[in-house]
Length: 457
Image 1: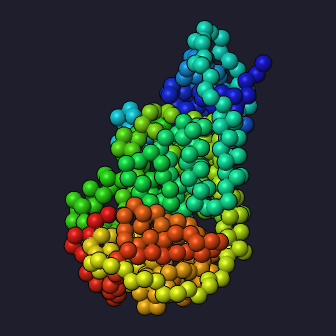
Image 2: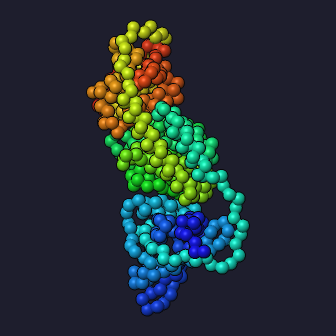
Image 3: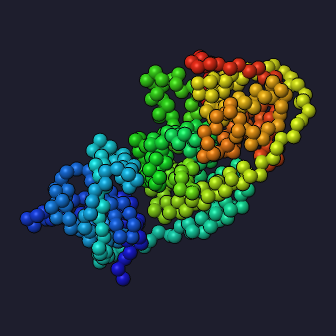
């Protein structure tokens, strides 16, 4: 039986380099090893174009080629008949291959040599198995389809956005055995992603941000495509290394309101999947592992399907929350707080907020917190509604795409993690309760105001 291309995708992971045969216009053959092969669909693959060498010259002169690929576990070999169609030098496919090639290059010590110039697209016209002995396949993994079904059921049962993120990460660990993961959402401006939930890290990193186009997560968001890397690569690394480099270059002052992005120091496998719904990007689901080649094509397919359901549920819960919000009922003044006053400083330049000298949050979440504590201190209010916050001109919520409920989740989690003297809790549908255990002294700092020297993250 002729093998299907999608049935031999494991042969395209790059664990065993492919062998490519081409022929010059005068009939001279050439055989070369290939750095990377990428599955595109059931009839097409993409090969990495890195050098203008004999293989490249032959393909441009004669578009027919043969490629031998090897199964990384059984040693089975397959011969593919190819025809060159075109070269892509930008876009989702190119970025996927660029990221994966960076991991292969780092793994083989060839980071200074392997640079992707283009993704060559080929049509696969025939596949044949090369006769020969093969090893027994490894024991079957747990069913990814069953895992997807179980986590999908958990997602379908969620009625609150906060629980949706927690249940998704719980499901990834329990059903997929993925122990390091995070969910990031796109901000209203559409230029940055912020971490709303994480699992498996020493520090949660809730509130940490990353620009579109930076690293695996940022590229996946910008291009709207999954990005998967099977080997550690400095080019797509995050976290402490980036922060240390900035501090070494005298940029420490710019980092005082930056929450470090969580991540494994020894991350070897990474997979970032866009979360989309109704034709727009909502965020990214990111998973990683300290083991090489932890995530394959099947893992990618399963998490793409899961991210699609996650996005649709996020959108549904957001819309339901807006329809069901309650109006706040006037309340009696609360009892005055006791103890040493806490200095709450708000910096108008970026809406960053400090409690005494401890950095809390910035951006939209910072402006929300500042509006809440101002009303609490000035008028004694403790209960607020999502509806009034959405319409409050002081907050300047960009639009409905900047999910207010998600920002409130972020703010509640930051307050809890910092063990702050101010807490936010749900008080019914679309209602919030603000509690302060100590008196609050508010200070508004205008544009360019100096921040505390001892600010920490």
